[in-house]
Length: 245
Image (cartoon, rainbow, N blue to C red; front, side, top):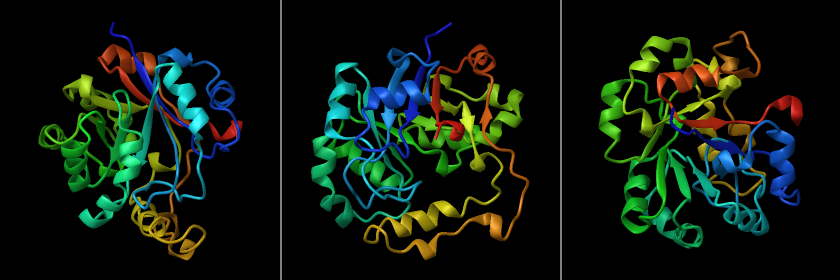
């Protein structure tokens, strides 16, 4: 069985908390040497999506510590709305972290192609926000993205999940929270708009589908990684358990 690798979240980590302390607290059963990348906010950029930026989560010292472990930094640049002019304004940030082993997770296809053209050492990952859930769509995006993150709800259809290929270029969540049962995921576009605004502004734009499509919340989920590995998957994404906040 091939060795697994994990991309883990530093969401809501305080920038002054050392990253090794954070990982030991949040992922006590996960050997840091099995971690391939750590993702979280660094300095501000309007390219962020997924979560509202309120401040850095990973310091320069944290990133140097990751590099010493040969663990990469993953930049969550999952804003839906990106112009080429905006991309050029963020060139310095992309240049700062451009190195083998680091990656970017993206939603916007144009941004993916610009980064591949200008920063070839980044691994380019398609975010779960893209909702790529069919083999034909996977095949379509393999020319743009190195890795594709699959939607969490595919865990409900294990036979279909097992049929998807190439597994070496697919990543699965092994934990999940509200996105697992969300029917619309309207928050992502609203967060993209908020992250274009000055920090602390625009929160009234936040849109949660629970307000119009109420659903039963299932809480924090942990999926059977052994079963997923038996299917042939080796790339996993781990989010923090809210009970350890």
